[in-house]
Each structure stands twice: as structure tokens, then as C-alpha cells.
Image 1 (cartoon, rainbow, N blue to C red):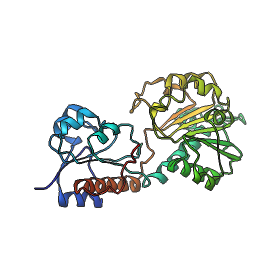
Image 2 (cartoon, protein in one colour):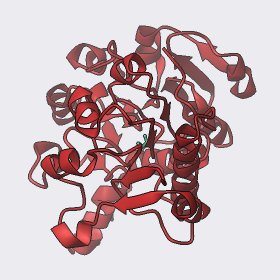
Image 3 (cartoon, rainbow, N blue to C red):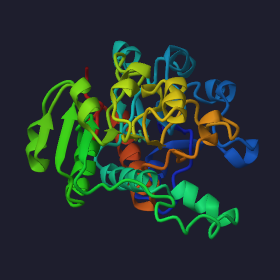
Image 4 (tube, helix red, strand yellow):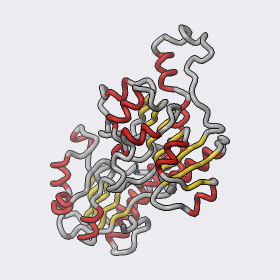
Length: 330
Ligand code: GLV
């Protein structure tokens, strides 16, 4: 009999991964049209996974002991269509010998480009500019030579928190802007930092010296709310904070205070807590806070490659073969 796979999100039909899955598996796909919810409701998910051999999931579906129990002991592999893994209880998967596949590399360029876009938009106050144009304020104030003036990237000191694949991609692009120094911090220094003349410093030094602080790190149990009142207090008043990691990295109450009080100049967030951020959230009332709806990997090319790689991860796991992109064991 064919193995059973459950997908929490459709794979575009033009993707090779879709053809491969259909060829060899009994495929069940969550249908958001039928339910009217983009994300599978938890109770339905727990019912739908019963007896499946493979699970293909998209953010923000949470994988924990409850879900693994609901699936049953025949579950052979989990394929997440993401590079981030904080929605998965990896220790629980390891305990049950269930390999987990993810999608590094194929989204690096897309996320790096999105991070540059957010950095520029935040530094050059695009949100305020667009709001002024739409609101009819353009022309009322632009005679001032400092109207909506922002910050230069050229000649600035950039600090990257987490110089992994994505952090390196961001750093390479920023080098082309003519930055003066590239600092980075993380659990260990990285040989590839030489490619961008990266200087390994402590988190505190990075906060104190950087004009741009850009978070590109993965989430660990240690870095929840790494960006708290203390961290924002160490940053320059002219500093810009960008988060391309996960919302949980930031104490949003502390960020609100830092932005509202002028402790830092501005922030650009591609990720928040929760997601989606409610439209009446107080961060959105701040002119100097730009929020994007988690668009990091949102290009057709990257999303197709992520879907294909996830399908190949799932198929390899079903065959008992090594996954093309296994989550490294910690
Ligand atoms: C996006 O946030 C991802 O983890 O792929």
C-alpha cells in the first residue's frame, strides 16, 4: 500500500515536488477554501494526522508531543517548509526517532533581499512617506529641508546578530552599500565572516557601536527576549533595529517604550508576536515602527523551491533514506 502523507498547505501544481508526492503517496491536503481558515485549526489537525506516515507542514503549525501522539507510532518523517524551527519540539522528535527536514539555502537570497528592503524602508521612513502621500499631507511640510529625512547606510556601522547563511547574505549586500564596519555576534565566530570583513564582538559591544542592529539569528532557549529594555538601553539613540528572525527574540513592550521615547530611532520588523499582529496593536501606532507581514521568503522562486525541498525531505524519510536537508541534531 502507498504511504500516507498529510500536507497542512497546498503545493503549487507546477512544482516538481507535487508530482513526486502524487506519484508515490496517498496525499491528503488541508483545504483552506472548505473551512475558510488559512491555517488548519488545531482540533482538525489532530484528527487529520491520525495514521499518516509523513507530515508536511507550513508555518505556524506547532509540532509537539500531542501532535505526534495524535499521528501515531507509524509516523516516519516531518518536513517543515521553513528554515526556522522554533515551532517544532525537536527533542521530542529525536526521542521518537522521527527525522525532521527543513528548507535552508533555497530561501537565503530571498530573505536577505527582504531584509535589505526592510532596512532601507525603515531607515528612509517609507511608511511615513507613503502615509503622507495617501493622507494628503505631502506639500504641507515638504518645504522643510529635513522633511522625512532618515539615515544613510553608507559609512555606517552595521551589527548583525547571528551571522549564519541569512546574516551572511545580508552582510554581503550591505558591503555593496559602502558600510564602514561589519560587526557580528553569536554563539561562536564564523570562518565565513572573512568574506564580509566581519568583526566578531560581544552582544553588548555590538549594541553600543552599531548604527544598524540586524537580527538574523535562529531561536534558542537562551535568546527569548534577547532584545529587552536593557538591550535597547545600550543602543545609540540614532540606531535602527531590524528583526528578520522571530518575534520571540524581542520584548515588544520594551521595544514600544524605546521607540516612543526616542531611545532608538526606528525599528523594522518582519516578524512579531503574535502573527498576525492585530491591526490595533500599539506598535503600529508608532511612525518609526515599520512592520511587514513575515515576507522574508515570499518570492515565487523561493516558495516553490521550499515546497520542492520539503516534498523531497518527506519522500526520503518515507523510504528510510537520509533526508536531502535534515535538521542538524543539537
Ligand atoms: C521563515 O520564517 C522560515 O523560517 O522559513
